[in-house]
Image 1 (cartoon, rainbow, N blue to C red):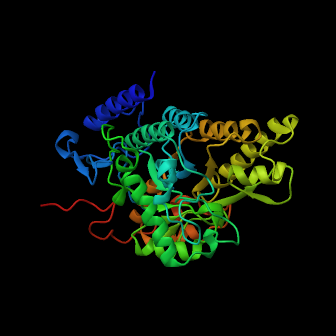
Image 2: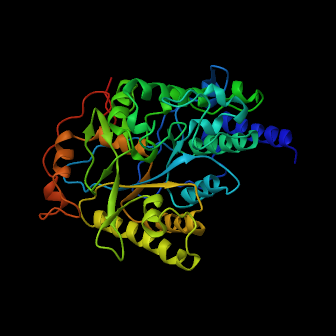
Image 3: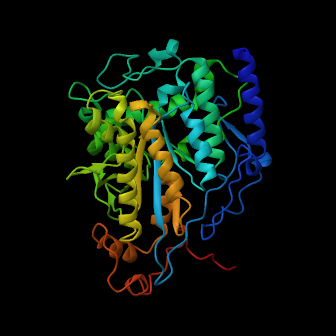
Length: 422
């Protein structure tokens, strides 16, 4: 099929989705798991709500499908076990990993967070539009994209959002290290990087010339509420910039398996340290970190060890999961890349973990957006109690007694607050 034909077909499919949000999640059997919150009710009818934004690259189409309403814990209620699967630099290439994990998520009652790199929607020939802080105009350590890659990535981003997943940001050029890396950027430089990441998503029709393609079905200024910095660097100044720009969370840090708290006004939803089978130290819940400890700088190490290395990651993540599930119920945050490092063993490991944990009772595999909504809906006194539990520590007196105190009423307008009767 010619490229122009593929674009036209993709546009028709996406347009159909945009015209019928509630029923066009790729034919999903996205059933609501028992005990999971119900999808948001009362979203505007998509046909009447569709409103193009800017050059038509994005559009307001009403409330996001499959986004549950956050509910406040009742006195004595045991908190659910949240698990967040997130993807840095999300884009669709010849490996088709974005589309594959969308399918895995749907089949296992999960939603995920996809951190989109803005330059993945910027054509190579338009690279001069990117002005990275402390680097030459048009430079990027992860390159740019071609029309087919942009078309494929847009299709996955559209469908992912329609299925209830979150589209966050991994920013743009992915600069790391001491020479102009993001760790050296000022607050104003971070604001420039964030603004450019938004612009590349909001103006892809102009930069690509694909004027007949369907828009992304969301307002990115409202959709974008968090991200993860390249190489987990630059968090201090990034969070200052992000707070001023209205972000709600950051996932650029390293933490233990404890309940989140706010830093710089943002929910600190860092990845965590979990047991590393065969080692006395713990490992960060990210494919790259497991790989670095196993094969060093080689992304394709000894093939005889691929299965063993994948089993190490899978078993380490599962040990971390059960430590929380049977303990303090702290949300488990897992980070990944759409890469086939060491023969794709880490992709297999993550898929195994999704299948093993997301269908368990009282488990919710959610996006950061959903987790932040839930945290915002809780009584601050309840969250303070939860943060007092150590790694793997379940309340000695049981959950019913531990959280039996009468919570303070939710402020008016906060997610989870009771409806006001007229």
